[in-house]
Length: 223
Image (cartoon, rainbow, N blue to C red):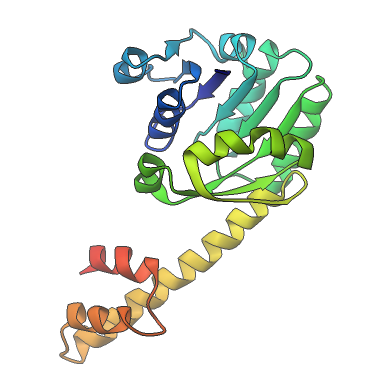
C-alpha cells in the first residue's frame, strides 16, 4: 500500500482517485470545492490544503483545468511545493502548456523531487473504466516507478520523452480531435442539406475507412 496524494476531484479526478483507492492504496485528497463523501467513505482522507496532501504522500497526482490552475496548485499559498521533501514524485495529469510544464518541472526538481506530465485522453467514461490513454513526459526512471499506478487508471500508457513531451502529445491529440469533429459536423450537415438522413450516413460510415471513435461517440451527440 502506497500513500498517494490526489488534488483535483472533478469529472476526471474523482473516478481516477476512486480507482486508486479500490486498488488498495491510501489516498490523501484535496479539492477546492470539498472532497466527495464517497471517496472518504471508501478509504480516502480529506486534507485541509494541498500542502498537507504533499506532506502525507509519497506520490502526488493533480488534475485541474488549465495552466494557471496547475501553477496555483503547485506553487500557490499552501501549495504542493510547500509540502514536498526530497524524493517525492509529482505527477500532473492536467492538459496544459508544454512550455509551462518544463518550467514547473525544473522548479520541482530544485526541491529534490521528480516531476512527470501525464495528460490523459478518454473522458470521464475512460476514467471510470480505467481505460484512459496516458501520455507521459519526464525521466524514464520516474516513469517506470509510477507506471504501475498509471496502469490502474489507464490502458494505453506511453512515455513520449522528457518533461513537456506528454503535453505536446496531448496538444497533437487535440488537433486531430478538433479537426475531425469539424469534418464530421460538415459531413453530417452536407448529408442533411442534401435530403439524406444523417443518422443513416453515420451508420454507414462507421463500417468504412471513415469509422472512428470520434464518429461513433460525438457524431451521435450531433444528431
